[in-house]
Length: 123
Length: 383
Image 1 (cartoon, one colour):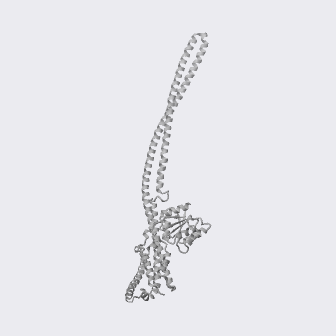
Image 2 (spheres, helix red, strand yellow):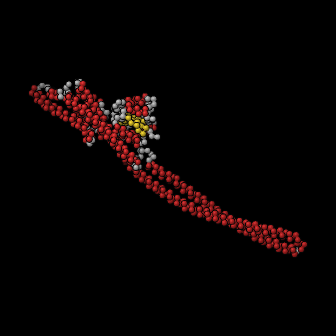
Image 3 (tube, chains in turn orange, purple):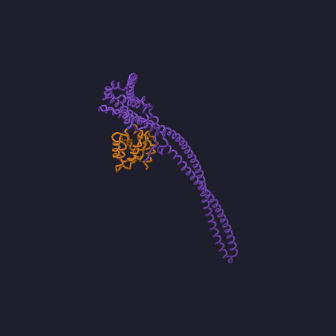
């Protein structure tokens, strides 16, 4: 059965690109346009194996989203990859402290993303 | 409220450069609006520069004459100070609308592009052009597995059939040997019949001699009679054995012939099977070569797809730049609306730069190169 990945990004084109990369590798993909919608998707979905989230988003940013996820009894074990144009060291440290498992700066390379996803899904 | 020309002199170029620094704008219809915003900002900046140059020249002349310090911007303040706030109040919302329109239209357009591209990719993969980094159980994997399976499973079957035929040959040889031995037994039975006939003849002669002897030969006549009866019984038994042996020899011969015929048929079947297996393996090998070609072509396509996915992410980066510009215009509008004192240009730029997220934004200050072409994928940082 295909593993499910939740993609959270306010850019629909970026979501489409991540979805294209992951679905070609056999992953099922769910989408959300910000952290708030991401939390709602987690509640609706039967099972999410991994989350790929942007950092700078309206309504709820990626780091706040990770903080919420890690406090949730059911979802706290889901690994989160931050995928963002942001490259500030302080933001990376914030994401790490919040509980994210990896940081990938855009533009992403599909094999690189797939490698990170498969490593964390199998971990 | 007065807007100091020095402040516009610093912020308007930043806006113009940021807009002009997105090279793809010239190729995308929707983005032309943003280019217009950039041109408008540049025009205002040029007008201010021109007026400032004239004022500076006049001030310098006056300074030469009077040797007094002159504020070069003083005439500009007098000329534009009252006009700029209402101008910016009027055009900033329009600029922002254009910027947002550009952002949303490019996002939608790239999204549609990716969706269509995704469909094309699926069709390529359905046609068998799939690279090696995909799921291992692709068509190529199936073909190669089939070849291995054929070679591994079919060759032993042929060997096994050959072994069975060899066993049948050994059985036929044994039957043939048994037939020869039976023939010998038949000859021996015939010998026994001959012995019985001779014995019978001797018994007849003995009976004749016993009759001549009269009473003295009466006992011998009884013995001769019994010997004759035994010889006749032996002759009958030998005859029965010979008959039976003839039947056995006949059965043996037909069995041997059937076995020989079966061996010939088996040999033909094995040879035919071997030919069919070789044909199948040959076809599968050809299929394997074609699959490898498709695999190689699939890898080339996959590589191009990956490059395209990286390239199409320009929209997300453009969107980041536009968002910062939009927020800055909003900040300018709010400042004007609040009728608050403006910060210095340096202070304003420090705040603007605090919202930068990418290296390209930090580099683009004072440069017309966008830097987007240099943006390359970075390594994954695992925590």
